[in-house]
Image 1 (spheres, rainbow, N blue to C red):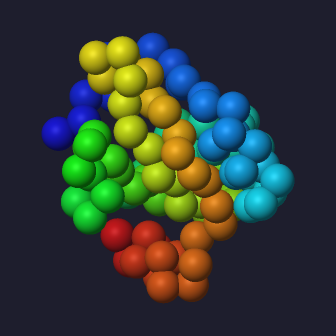
Image 2: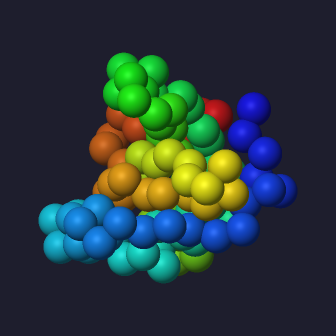
Image 3: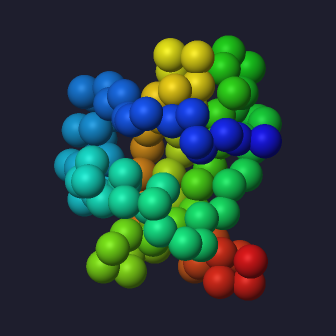
Length: 99
């Protein structure tokens, strides 16, 4: 279970931030907004968690843009490290809306 009450902020890697912005046109602010808006759907990313535990977050921005965010934690689970942020695909939107 993820304890969001312990989260104090975000830890952005320059390369990941640039990839999300330039390739997927998702700003850091938009990606962060998704964690504060309901509903937020969280799934473990077991296939990519060999070195560290990764998660998928399905959420929406303040403007209603639906995002798929892959992330992990840093600093003893106090910081969210976004690995990638992009628009949800059709199948993901359907799963998000059903949940």
